[in-house]
Image 1 (tube, rainbow, N blue to C red):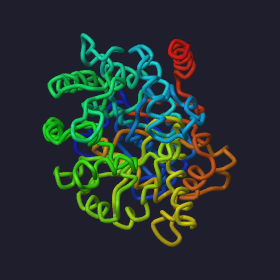
Image 2 (cartoon, rainbow, N blue to C red):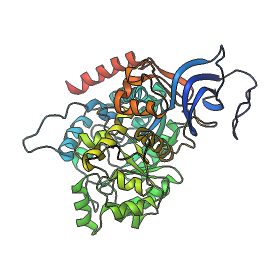
Image 3 (cartoon, one colour):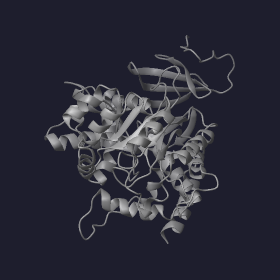
Image 4 (cartoon, one colour):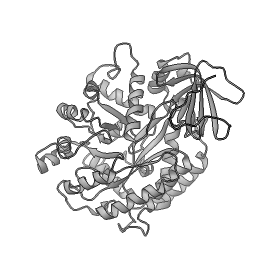
Length: 469
């Protein structure tokens, strides 16, 4: 039998560091295939065979798909999930939620941050995400002074990723101001704010922290146009080099109004005029972008990072996904506030937002007769790989062996074949259909549970007890 190989993948002469997975059906880049064997060498796919019988050394499963990238996470906010669902005296929106988030940040220690992040990362793996972009902006001690090791909290994020086995793109965040035009930071932002020199040291600490993690990437995240001045943004772009650049933009209507008052331009228009936005940029949310702005953005090849569950939870608004799709715009999905971690739920919520907005069904399917879930899945897989600086996506030679197996015993998947499997996973079953997950060739989830779930939950409980009592 012939094994496929790509440049940089050595031939398999021995069996050291080799794993063979066999699936009755698996979704490959060219489509669904039957009787598929994936051979991995040192975590990467070294061979793909189809229409082949299983061997005694194969680990056998029924349904396999590539794990999805999570392009936007604030892991520490997992500890806040469910604690902001009470109505305030004047109503609630993003800004009132942010005040509650600040209260949580004011108390979290390095040990507690690592404990919360580790559970969030484990739940991402259980939910079908195999790589995460951590948009990490809590840098300093409780009083706002830098730790003796300026990368203390950055290292804790890397440690949580190493423990759980998730792939990591780590983006330290530069945050210096409370509003457009360089407004002084508020007291409750003291753990975030830094100057460019200190940020450069944090960035270097991040690169050192992930050095031992297979395939890890470090990029740069200017927090938002309201937190970064024009004079700061350009050197940050230069610091990133060819690495990923992520930025919150146009998430809130108030943000758009404030940007207009400051510059006379909407946020996305301002950015596109001020910076050479290209394929290494991921603009997170872009909820309140106009059709003209989306058209200009699509021409850059940048990715829009959509977080439909969080955007719904915060009442942000509805992204113009149908218009973006018509422009051949690239998108990916993220779990953001981690109020609910489920890759399928993010895709489902994205489509349902469009159905509510347009009073129609299957709005984002790529054409007549096409599967909506397949359209969304393919786009999120490709866009996510681009946004996270991963060189290749999908179950193909040269890519990391990041695989999710779906349980054929789940009633939602009964007698499903081809794209109907994806439709039933995304719109019916969600994370409850996930059986096993491999990340970088290592099996990290079995029977829907992370291999360290019990220990991670126990540590998380201890952390929350300290934080909330």
